Structure formats: C-alpha cells, structure tokens
Length: 123
Length: 106
Image (cartoon, rainbow over all chains, first blue to last red; front, side, top):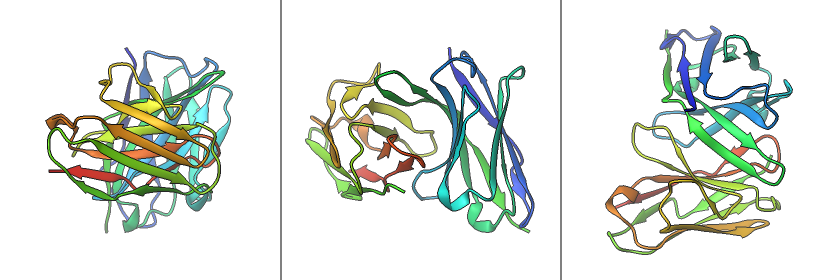
C-alpha cells in the first residue's frame, strides 16, 4: 500500500524558511518512473503545483517560486524535503505531497496524495 | 508556462444530470492531461490520466476526451457523492500546471 505523509511547522513567521518533509512508503524513489511532487492550496483557492523530484534526482520547479524552492530526497529514510525561503502571508496554504508515476506511454498522474499539512505565515 | 483554462468555474446541477467540464490548454499537450476530484477538507483524488483513461476504482459514469488543446470531463449521471471541485492538470511540459477548478454544487 502506497502512503505519503507531510510534516512540518503549522506556523512560520514572515521572512523565515519553511521546511516540509514528505515521508512515503510502499514504493521506492529509486525505481524508474517514480516521482514525488509538492502541491499547495491557499484557503478557498485552486491547486498550485510547486516542485518535483524523480528517481534519477532530476528536479523541476514552478516558475514563479523557482528562486525560493529547493527539493531534495533522503532515500534511506524514504523522505522528500521541500524548503521555501522568505515566507510571506500569501504563502499560507495547505501543502500536499503526492506520488507521480510516469510510464513509457503515459503520464499516469498523481495517484496517491498525503492528507496535507496546513502552514500559516503570520507574525 | 502552459495555462489551463477550465469552464465553467461553477456548475449548479441536480442529481441525475449530465455534467460536462471543459479544460483548454494554451498550447498543444497531446493527451498528457489528468483530472482530479477534490472534496472539502480532503486531498484531491486522481480520476483520469492520459485524457481519457479511468483511474482504477473510479466509477464508469466518469469519462474524458480530447487531445491537443481541448479536453472534456463528463459525468453521465451525477450522483450525490460527485458534488466536489474538479481540476485538470497538464503533464506535457514543465512546469506542471493545474486549471483553476470547477465547483459542482447543488
């Protein structure tokens, strides 16, 4: 059974750095075609894709936040880490991690999601 | 970046109605499109990938079509559990992007 779980601080102050951890099980991030992605959702708003890392350690970021985001993985711990610098109240959101599977023929989509972790940015 | 425009943003419908949601991409993305359903307070669930392939366990009243720049998600007969917000996502090009969502309400 594939599961993912996000963890991190519920409250950060403006200008601080946010560090989120996605702990997963049921698959290996060393298997070809496996990716872990981060998505966020401000209250009452749409989903926003943030970043991903793949089995080959390739990384991609959303354009508007590229300078503030860093994604990495810890294979022995089955974890993916996301850091976001210079937090602002507009970054208040629920942050999700999800598995993305890519095959030879298809992008299979983000098939398993964590429950999300809510982050509030406030002084 | 590829922009995805969903229409309509809101749909007011009844149980049993046929529902169609459109997702338009700002450039061609082949069939590299996924649809998700999200209920309040929950993470999204994958409904469909490759534009028209139903994810395992998703009821057959959901169907998808399209390629290139225009895609549709259809619910043939809306059930009470289908009241939710639906999002399209393109996976053809980085950065990945989502549409703005379509809220289906009573």
